[in-house]
Image (cartoon, rainbow, N blue to C red; front, side):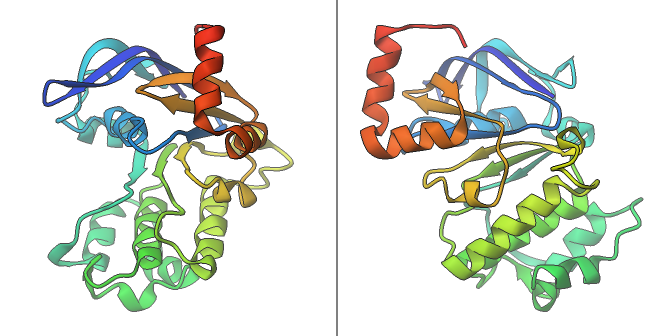
Length: 251
């Protein structure tokens, strides 16, 4: 679904990502761990094609096609959708108006879908204006559910979310990825995803296939998501950096 090869990225002339190699297979949910400032959000923004993230070297392939220089709208039409960590307030645009634009040519019952994640009362409000952290996350997820992308980029879905909202956010993401049927019986019918998490709490709701650790702008290691999370909690990211320096490998 996604393949990143030897990626280097600058923002305003400042290097942020270097030698990033990463693969997400079709139907897989991959996790991206890393400390603050490691470049995780920059990587998702680069995959989405936001213009202030300049690829200076390397390639990005989506569904086998080179999208390194493709604009955001083309990537969206190909099936990439993103949930931002801090989406902007959009004054003067109602949430339902945006959803109706996104759902054109799709037989989607917006009201029913909004009701399913307790967002019906927000449909006629300006997007994100006065929303709590959990409400913003649910608004973002509602927009993604309407878009129905093949590949989800989720930037810290736990951030700013209280425990009650977290359960709703987590189960919504799980249903969203498994919209086509029983994922446990047939994992490859899932939509694919790359999810940034600090706490790892999202793993309580998802069956993730693989995790990567990003530190200092580069991928340090990869492996089983729960095992890596346990290592991070017990030893911190410094141990991963030391291990990488001692055993350099090309991921």
